[in-house]
Length: 183
Image (cartoon, rainbow, N blue to C red):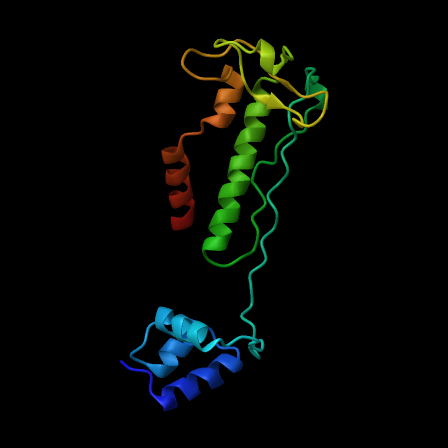
């Protein structure tokens, strides 16, 4: 395919109307999106107008925020109970699945936090050893930053509590996500 004068003029017109490179390629036929992008670049075209009709973007509800563990244990009466069924955002397609997966992961982390709130040893980077938990707590730029410091499991850098947060089995999450998508 060669760029004839008519095709170049049609490209310029479509580009100025705000069509995407994919749309222009489909309109011209026998040309790829990358060829359109290359030609636009070589011609030095810019300053496209916005298309008249913007495609609607689905809105996604933010996943619930997970409270981080504090340095002191929380009494049982102070813990919030988890809802029996998570709130699902009303969205379309893969965006909904992604939001659901994020919400489920956040709830899984919250569930782990409810099981065993850690009591930190509060160690600095200089006092970390091979057998201490290296889970960072706080903002590294602040003077009150520290590492968990509890005894870590053999072969991993975290204590049992933080390992459950850091190492979530991806195969289980994927199976659960696929099962929910099918229903």
